[in-house]
Image 1 (cartoon, rainbow over the protein chains, first blue to last red):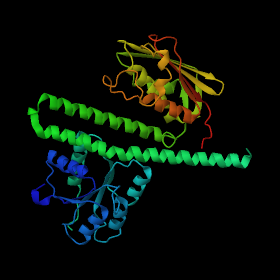
Image 2: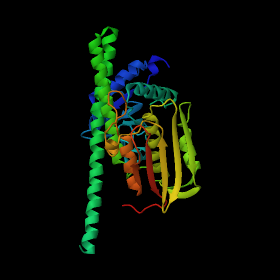
Image 3: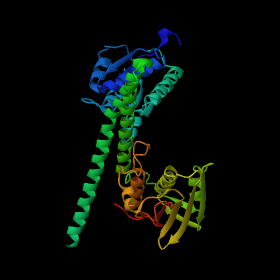
Image 4: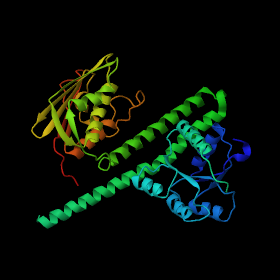
Amino acid sequence: MTEENLINILLVEDDEVDIMNVQRAFRKNNINNPLFIARNGLEALEMLQADKIPKPHVIILDINMPKMNGLEFLQEVRSDEKLKRISVFVMTTSNEDSDKINAYNLNVAGYILKPLSFEKFIQSMSTLNSYWKLCERPSM
Amino acid sequence: MNEDRFVQCQKQLAQVKKEFEEFVYLVSHDLNAPIRAISNLLGWISEDLGPNIPDDVQQNIKLLQDRAQRLEKMLSAILALSRVSRTNLETGYIELPAFLENISEKYRNNNSFITIQAEPIGFTTYYQKLSAVINELLTNALKHSDKELTTIQLTATRVNNFLQLLITDNGSGFAPEIQERIFSLFYTARSKEETENIGAGLTVARSITNFAGGNLTINQAKAGEGSSFILLWPLHILETT
């Protein structure tokens, strides 16, 4: 994949260290995709709806966040004509079935538990990277 | 106490129990995030400092990481305890000795010798829960073994409405004065420094057994003679609330 084809990724996450986790894992895996960051669902929704950032192809979404949590945000995204196609990966510590069911009902591309060790996290990021590289997308 | 009052008390008890489990779940879940962050940050600090870290700093970072990991494991154990009544509730028909053979298989290696003696018993039960308890007892026997070859004997018989499973090993056993304490949460027979063990396995095993309406005890003559656990597990699924 050439540099200009790299898809945009939006990370919606409120925990500073978890953001660093993703950034660091990107560097370790030589993932050079543009990574945009929002600290909660509301901020992410504003960024998207006001076109403050290039439209992302993939969103990595935490669930437990202040102001607007991940599932509420996801609901807004799915009911927005311009945003509803975006692939969303939930990345959370919540192992509750209710959260998994709600997320899959809103058509997430995957529900991933935040790995305990950084080594595992690096692996998970590498797998995700291979996955979204593999997927074809319409020109938006 | 009249019957209405009794029913009301039971309802209240169930409610308090549920609230308690939810509280424990929330606490252990939410405490996990900062601990994971501490653990990650330590790894990054060490990585960023490169290979020229003074030995004592390196040693302190390692100690901190070990402690963070232990805390993480302790929280996972509390989480597991809080979920006993909510997870692995699937029931299914199992047959002995095949059920025991299946579980034991993965523990058999050059350092362990497991024999099974079981009456043919078939029954419907929380099979995942029973499996978890037996797994824990086998793990425990192997972990505490001081012999080159650990031998474990599983003996299963039917006693009234219960399956009685005896798990006997040739390890060092437990001194009589600590035999009840080994079921306490975070109690370890050996120093926490020399083992990765956090002392939660038997606590969880007993909690699961109690949930199913069974009983888990230790039965042993003297220290140094190996330990023998007695698991009583109901052959019928009890109506629990």
